[in-house]
Length: 64
Image (cartoon, rainbow, N blue to C red; front, side, top):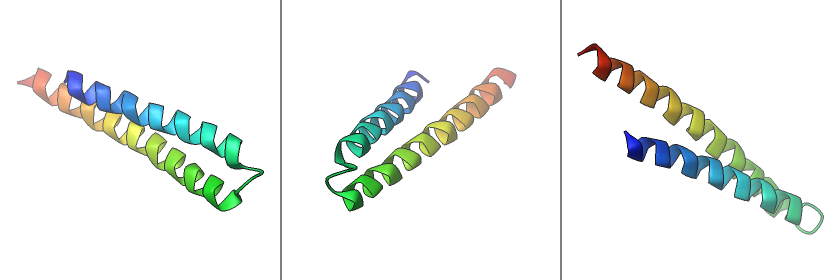
């Protein structure tokens, strides 16, 4: 279970780094900034997806 939490946190770190890159690249290269926006959105989505299934899996293990 500990590994699942680590990967959740990793997705949040990727999202934060992507948002930072968006802020840095917004005035220089918009296409690259849009790419990092996409990475940030996907990373945040994966964080919530992983968290939902980790909790669901944990509940299933506790019922046994």
